Image (cartoon, rainbow, N blue to C red; front, side):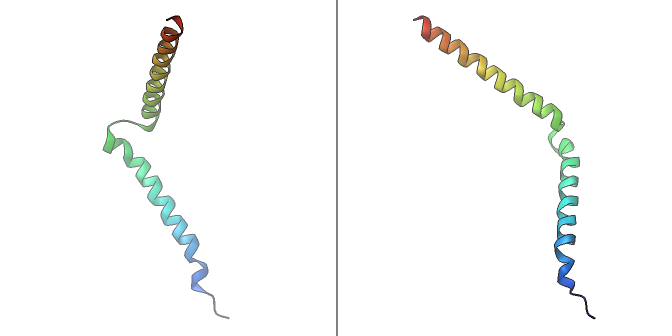
Length: 64
């Protein structure tokens, strides 16, 4: 009985995609000069600062 070579195609394609993604994530800090963890903290601090400014503006407008 002959096996269909097309049956293995999705698995090998998925494996290549996973390897490519893992390699991309491992090389990301070297390209950008910071880690993903530090980038998340940086984004959170910007969001927190933006929220604080918004609260100050709302408080100021409510007092006028």
